[in-house]
Image: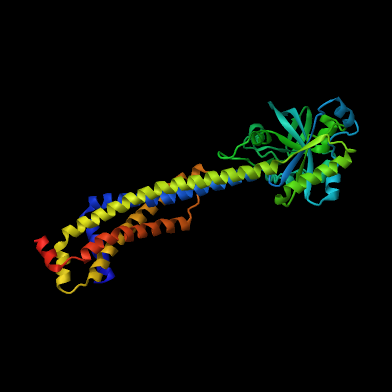
Length: 412
């Protein structure tokens, strides 16, 4: 007996009993296919989810917003402070123990028009540091620069959706849009934000709105004496969020003459908690999908063992003859065990091939595609081989322990 002979015998058995072999391997095919498909789908979902979190731009970021007085006494105290102002950024950066960058911003709503197309949109006045704090990158062009801020430049970075609505397929860079009657030159276009797994109302407002220099918005629209809407503060040490909040509060209280007419929204901590919840959810998904695949493989393994037992009962004469001419128990055991492993491996290969085909067909429906992990393919094939060993051991033992006389008599 040699490995080539065992392989030839196993493949001959598959060809001789095509329907039975197909039904036998169906469970293994489905199990390995589900492992490949589910692994790729989960990887695709995980990539999309974490990309969605990255698009939020809140990692290590806290927001400082204005706070209304709670009573008349507090309202009297608040008169000592002008509220949040752009100058507060210098105060925050002056201490800079945990603060790595800070960016003030002002919200406004104005009519944006190009030609005969107009819409009411959110206009955000920002500084150059806003892109750093919120991890914003562009699909085309550049972001607001310090020179735009100093010169009160009428330049704008429009959102992904605004670009489509005002310009369609036309390149907007260098062209002009009207904001409440004033012309603004488009210098950049934002990227598409979010996906089907992580979507946020702010994504929509940002993609349908535009950025302009903070000084420009305050000078022409909201007023230079009005407080800013918020200051976004970022730390390069996300694990020090508590220390960051304490530093921000202490610095601004001094700048506001001891008045805490602001509050700090620890958005980064909320994102950390959301990531933990999503991680738990993904782990549960993996358990469920792994269980489904395991059940399919279990059924396939039982089917494999049943077919091997049937095969042995049909090959009693062969077993008796082999043993009569000198085949040892170990050789007979190895022959039938290897046949079971080969059958299982064939099912695994077919399942992996089907899984890869399904994954490639569905990849277009995912923003980041569906990665086909070689590790997942190896695991699927490895499990198929293990099943062949586990469920082929009993039939192989039964065949190896037969006496030649009994096997030949039963065959006759």
